[in-house]
Length: 153
Image 1 (cartoon, helix red, strand yellow):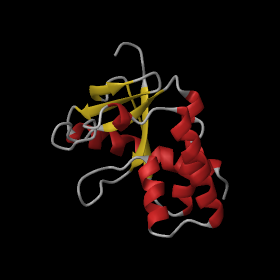
Image 2: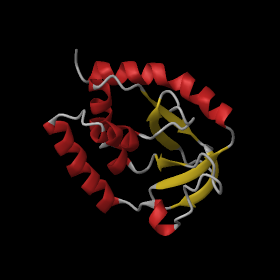
Image 3: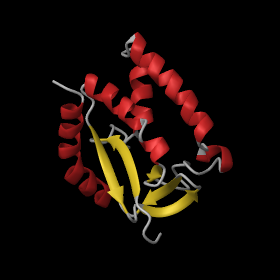
Image 4: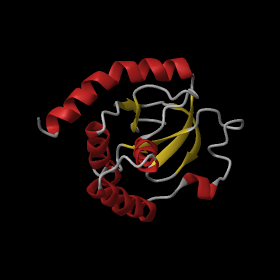
């Protein structure tokens, strides 16, 4: 993977099934439960459409990429060079903050075994769940505090 760096925004704590949903999954979960305001839902729809047009959904290229038996724990990470995609994540993080959903930002040179790659992202199977948990625990407190400070009181 060389000098490339990767970034992922995900739940600070695993779900009951042991998965840490990414930022888009977390916001979509709030939407499915009817918790988004009109403004937040408009943001989710508009930006979801933008992301769908701006980059490839890995499962359209490889339908098995997120298969839990074939690629257990597979998760997408942005390449840090894809700033046009990463910059828009802040709006999603603001929605999570508004609803008290804890999230973390992870950065890594080697997040796992790459099972899909394109110009903007990789999908990896983590080296181990324990390693990912340690990395999440190390990063989430500072990132949550920084995000809330940036969005005002």
